[in-house]
Length: 121
Length: 107
Image (cartoon, rainbow over all chains, first blue to last red; front, side, top):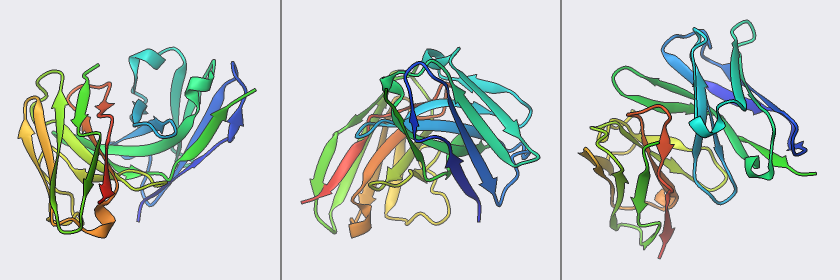
């Protein structure tokens, strides 16, 4: 049974940097069949894809976030991480880590439970 | 980014009903369309991938169809656990985008 678990601060101040970690169990973050992904959801709203990282180190980000978001993978700890800088209240959301897999078609088939991040002074 | 538009935004139905949710893409995405179910307070769950393929473990009352710019998710014979929110997502182009969601409520 593959499980993903997000961890990080529940509250961050505006202009500060958010660091979130996703710990994977039951699968390896070095598995090249997966892209490791972050998705967020503001309260009462829809899902927003933030970006993804492949075990090779290749990354893709939502264009509107590029420059503020970075990701990394630590295969020794079986974790991957998101760093988001220059936070505003608009970054308040539940943040999900997810695993994206596929061959010709790609989809998110692994999800963490999500962690609420509130940006407030 | 490719814009994904779902309709309706909300829907009321009864147990046993057949319902259809529509998703429209702002450009041709072939069959690069996935559907997710999200219960309140929970993480989304993959329901359909590649427009019409069911992952193992998803009940056969769920079906997906469409290609290009028009897609639909149909639930035949609603069960109590199906009352949730549903999201489409395009996987044609990274940066991925989701529809705004459809909330399915009990009538």
